[in-house]
Image (cartoon, rainbow, N blue to C red; front, side):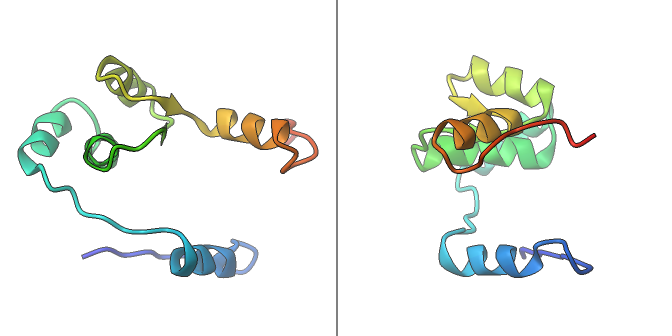
Length: 102
């Protein structure tokens, strides 16, 4: 079972729900053995993301957890973090500037 919980105004709830309806696709991992083996070393979500990356032949995996990034890189996964996504968005003119929140 998959659950998405978003609370409070100003959280972008409507944008997230719209994205889920229009372009976010929820998938289950097929190779459960690989998933369980990887979960010994990193978190459940990170492990599932890496296995799904390989199962769907993705081009890029957005992942921030430092240990999981190392594991993913060692497995040949092309990774990007939040800061990399923001920089890419800026370089493509999707956002005007990227700066610290304080």
